[in-house]
Figure 1 (tube, rainbow, N blue to C red):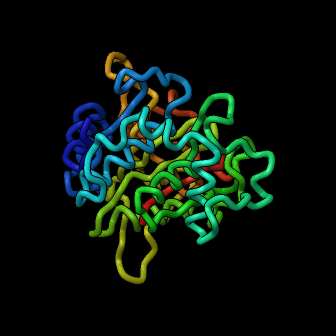
Figure 2 (figure 1 turned 60 degrees about the vertical axis):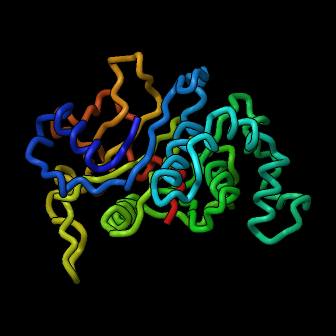
Amino acid sequence: IPINSNVLYSLLSSKMPLSFKDTKEKEVLAINSAEFFFYLSEGVNDYNWGCAWRCTQTLLSSLVTTNNILDSLEQIKFKEIFYEYGSKQRLSSIYNKSRSLPENDPLPSFFEGKDFAPFDNKSHWAEPFISSLICIDKGIKTGKLLLVNGYPENAYAPKQVFESTVSTLQFFEILCQYFSKEERKFPMIVDDSISTYCIVGIVARLIRNKEGEEWREKGDEQNMPYIRIIYADPHCWKEDKGEQYLFCLTYNESGELLVTGEEDDVTNRKGMKFEKENNWMVYMIE
C-alpha cells in the first residue's frame, strides 16, 4: 500500500471526518513516499511478532521510492531481511564495522545478557536497533537511535546503543522540525518494547513556526492540543476490514492522549502515550 502526503490526506479526511475535516492538504506534513507493509504481507504469517520487521520494511521501501537510494523493493522482502539479519554473528559484524572495528571482534560488555539478535530471543522480535543495523548495512550513515523519556526495561537492545534520551516535549519538537523540512523525509520507527509503529507525518496547523517563537501556542496544558501525529500501524492486514492501518492521535504537551473526534481512537490506542512514565525507542534517518 503506498503512503505519501496525498494518500494520507485523502484517507484521513475520508475516514476521520470530525476534527480533521477542515484540515487543508498543505497542512499534512508527511514522508515523501513509502510502501506500507503489515501483518501477513507476502504470505508470511508474522502475526503477533513481526511488527518491527514490517516497520523496517516500510522504512526501507522509502529508500527505494525516495531518490532510489535502494534499487528495488525486491531487496526488502520479509524473508530476505529476516534470514539475512536475524543472527547475532551478522548483526555483530555490522555493529563493529560501523565503529571501524574488526568485524569479528567481541561486542562490548554491555551486550552481555541481551538477546538483541532476533534468532536468539523467544519471539524473533526485532527492534529499532535492528532496523538501524540493517540501514547501516544498506549504506545509510545518517540514522539516529533515541530514547524518549527513558529506557524500556524489557528491551532486547542494550541502553548504551542509543545516542541520547529526550523528553516528550523535546521529541515532539524533533517531529515538528523533521516533518517541516524541505528535504527528503522518511518514516520514523517507534517501539515501547511491546509494539512497534511508523510515524509517517504530522498535522501542521498546530505549528506556529515563526522565527524567535516557540513551536506551539500556549494554553491549558491538560486540554490544549500540542501535536497531532499520523501513524502507520502494521498490526493489521488487508482482510481485516475492522482494522485501520493509518490513524491520527492528538497529544497535549505532556504526551497525554486527547479525545478530539473520530480520528482519535483513544479507546483502542491506549498504549500510544508519551507521558513521562512511557518509554520509547526511536530510529530515524536524518
